[in-house]
Image (cartoon, rainbow, N blue to C red; front, top):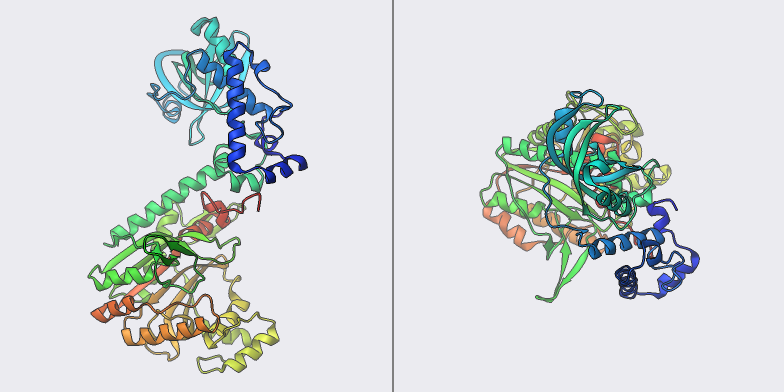
Length: 554
């Protein structure tokens, strides 16, 4: 039988029907019974083959598959023989990547050293050849090294145990001399070995491409099998570190704001709701940290940022996820112009820190240039150009609606001038702005937290940054007039009462904070997941280490 997770996870129609009738607790109890039965058989003197039941006649198709049963039996045999399948400590004195870096290219075929190392890694390959076994160990970063286990070095009994107990996927510890095999392969010639962690589930076939379902439902398998997935995890970490460094260079302070909020605000989005038993109140999961970060400006923290988890109860596609990571920052006495310069620096430095260049290579092999100066267009001006007629903040809702209907543009149930302008603009431009482009000066109706434009009535000082046809970041000259802010939030509340599920509530505590006095400021928000999309060409599910997926039984 092929050792693949696909085989292990496969369900017949009969087993699927049984699964629907068996609770999680019932199945867990059944598997424990099977584990105990296998161990009792081993303790009673049964061989590995005798201890397992490939047909699962006793426990049925939802019990352990044959491959798992065999590994459970090996675990039981280790315990019987006084070997720990999951030891607390092993003398791992060296990393595989360090050994390879030190000795690669320094040894001739067949050359041996007296240098002793203690290494550990996951077993990806085993070849048993009589009195000499070869094993390939893999470090977490994907670096591999060969281990050699010889009868003349460790003895016949230890070699027999190795052949009997070690499987693909196990974490294995080797201590031995660094040598080069006769074929020139850098190797550790073992003087002792131990299983560091016994794998009860077999690995997928590493020579085959992982299916999308396995990659998203079992990302830990993807990390083992696919170098691209491991690299995404590491590059994401590098990107976040780079963002933090750049903010630190500009004297920004990182803070943490509440995830559970009594009023949802800071963005136009449909929130998730939950209930707090201690206070017996309904709460919202954060859709944005904006209103709390602005309270920090009020309190005298003039440059503030947060890398935060946000939750929005809306659609899922290649650039949207219900749970995502966003970075928001606010700079006192800045504007949407100064914050645009900061965002460009953040993105370009991240590209340099992660990939060594502002020209990045995407997953499809194409290159994308984030360097140099970035294009700027106005929303009203570009829409007017696309329609062949001038659109201004004074253009009526009726006229905009007629244009939308003529073009077949989808309309919201609750509409106003600003929403129609944005829908029409998206119809012409949203997925067509490939080069980095700042789209500036939005309608006031759709931007309740943004300061009115200093010279263009009916518009606000807001930009959206588009990269490769999707929105990556947004920036504002922040509204700090508490009277105007109340007017905007009241308008939002009216939209909510009319059925707009994305409209914000009135946050009186925030309005009171503005009344204490918030300095003029520039602010920005950018999805960290989307930044990785821009830098790599991946989908959002590929950039999120553990994406939310619908359970199999729903």
